[in-house]
Image (tube, rainbow, N blue to C red; front, side):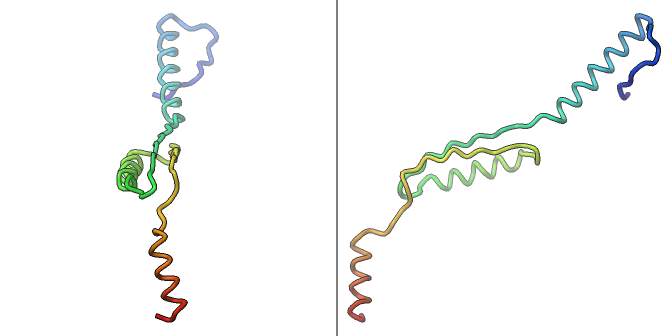
Length: 100
């Protein structure tokens, strides 16, 4: 039953208790509908990106339970990305310069 204001200024004890009960139920439903959740994911990466697979699984798990009004925060802590070793670059640069 939807909550409504009673037009009567004086209510019997039974009517007053019923009105309080309806108001409490209505407030609870409204609060539940307005509730937003915030999911926080902590990602501690390394230079080779070895933790990316676990991050992918965590994001997938959160997306399966999150709703449109929810918020997802990713706290990214990483030393940087992976780059090619110097020897590989030097060999390829020299090979392209000499025409090999």
